[in-house]
Length: 592
Image 1 (cartoon, rainbow, N blue to C red):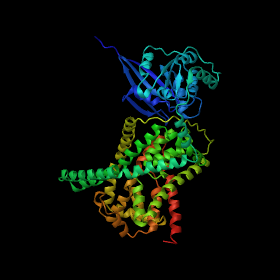
Image 2: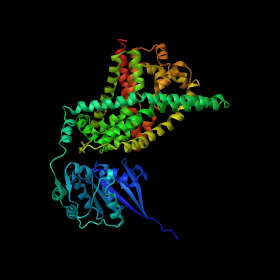
Image 3: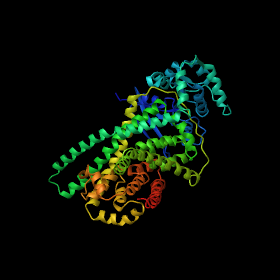
Image 4: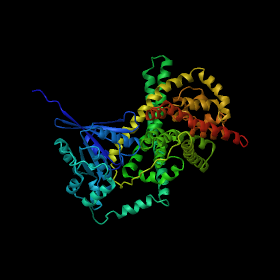
């Protein structure tokens, strides 16, 4: 018998942020999904498939929005897609713990489509809070099929698929466009929602503490300090393990390629392999630690509270609270910070955050800061100096954001609607899978593609007269910045990854021409080169403020789609670093 072709339906998933929309999407589609930017936009949208017999359902996870009438890309994409009729049905996910608020968007969607299902999610949390929702009354008053669900526990999914299979998703009547959706949402919620005595008083008390100015800020700073400390120091052991593993691989490759010409061995093993090994050893462990920890904070529901606390300070600099979150992400890796800027709705504020994120010291710069601080300043002074540079990076990013917002990126201040979602039990396994595979591996692979060819170039420069010529050419200018030609050349050659700055400096000082051959020689070579405290401080400043690494630049281009904006992201921190180093060298010249 001839097998019939599977039928296909397209289902749009819409809803406010933090209503469990992505959880429902993941539960329905499993691993049969992919994520990509909306055509012509920087907003990321996920698509996935669910097969039921001979029926294929393609789910489109639209951006989370509070309304369809805003000017942001999220609202535009959701409104245009739903009204276009491309979807056979729109499933609007509501929050069972705050139905009235969710119904505002649902009613707006009802104005532009006649095919929708109302899915009231998070009913397990609503039950714990003593909230009961009468689905029949809600369906009768809203005019559409209603499902009560708990997507995290996969409750209600079968009912949703059954309605889609039966094509039972037509609304009973069209809402008058003139109807006030806020009055209407209040009326419907009042009829179908019954609330028992508050069972969650402790959570409310904790929430008041976390968002208060008196206690919230110290708690936030403590959490950030703990997050960064765990990332930096927790990465040491796996980083050393990777170094040891790659060292064994280096020896094995040398033996395996013994019959090859020496220049070819050097270019591929000392160049491509050694550089890639250095980058992966230093970059991968902190990303593998930082991403899951930060995603856990997001999953628990703390990040919106963090953004709320930081919004006031960032507003004074022309940014918003969400930019503060991307700055925190940048402490682990600037690539993460740039990618995280997608959460900022305003295109202007998103661009400001992208252009300034490289001023936040990522994990790749901390080895340079810690090494130089430890060599020239001892004990508590060194620790305070590193902490001071971290604060300087944040202040620099805020200052440049303020200048941009008042000059070339001047614009009417956008609104910032912040929802405080309830605290939830973290989904640890889902967080690990999402953070490791969707973020860590993807960014690590992107870095590897840049590091390997850059390693070949680095080997060629080190084994020709180019290094000496370039050092001599750069030296007069570098001296005005308080450094020397070798240091400035190291920053240029280390563009693939900030982790390479010190190894390239040591390679230039030793004359060995191999990153693999200089391990453990840091203190001896730097002190023998006659560096002063002024040289160390200026080098640390330039470590903080200079062009983004190659992986970050590629990511900026992918996020903005503009070479002009990518070039601006290169020039801005570099110009700041050069100006600060120039004046710092001039001032310190009287004391050092």
